[in-house]
Image (cartoon, rainbow, N blue to C red; front, side, top):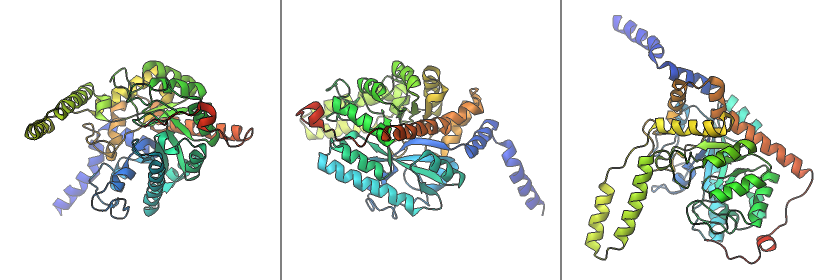
Length: 415
């Protein structure tokens, strides 16, 4: 009897002993949807070795080998998730279109399999209703403009299937936009690239500038009549890698009304991790030049065994604060990129850890109103503005019939 009483007392006292900052973070995320801008679970399921693309075999009701499953989404109090429908940028146009349709289908089947936990939504109002009903509001985001194969009709078709943002490039240039990963080819957006942005505005599809070059960022911000987003990017002033957003662009995001959704990728939030990544690329290039196969294997094994520096939750919080400092608190959000990275920051190991990030910001003096904007109110505002822009534009014109040949001439495709 005494043991039972002690156990009951300990259970009652446990919440009282929890970190007050974490308790405050959990309370906040129970009333405001945490909207994450990027999760690569759909590609993880496609690449699942035991059963590629089988949403039933990759059971989200139990613990998965990746970063994401239903129990951890609940523990992380995720209110809404943009599921990336990613296609590698090196695919030929016809194959890229096929894989894009397959990934949209896979993501929709994944959401439909768990109606008790997930709900497909296509608008800000639907997102809020799903959250109020206890579901993770699920939106789709296409990662890389190569998937439209230079066709505005394909862009519109993806929107009709539920895609609500498109990243203009991934890690390769498209025929009409420069990415961040290679030397510039177009100097930003071509005339057809500007037409893509305008058509996304007409559709109400968010223009995503993660992965693009600074020149493409500038051009998109000049052309777009609706707020843009960076679905998973951090601050270049803190970690100087091409994927991150320079301060001068952050200042322009303020005027556009956009949102920079800070990513957790170690090489983009930690200088040590970024330097290690760059050093490994150089070492891999050197190894590739070694002629002796045995020596190549030895050096490859040595490189693989070399310890990697870890990123930390505190470094992610630093990037959030840098975006707030330069762009303003109305223009910062969260874009973790879970299931799209091989290792995650210490303290942010999977989707269950979001409350701990908010607790860190509580300890840094963020108010509840500021945290609510970071969690989801900023993205909801941007999404509603994109929807309003679409209504206005659709009242004045129909779908664009522009082609890349009309606007750019006979340009060779960039692959």
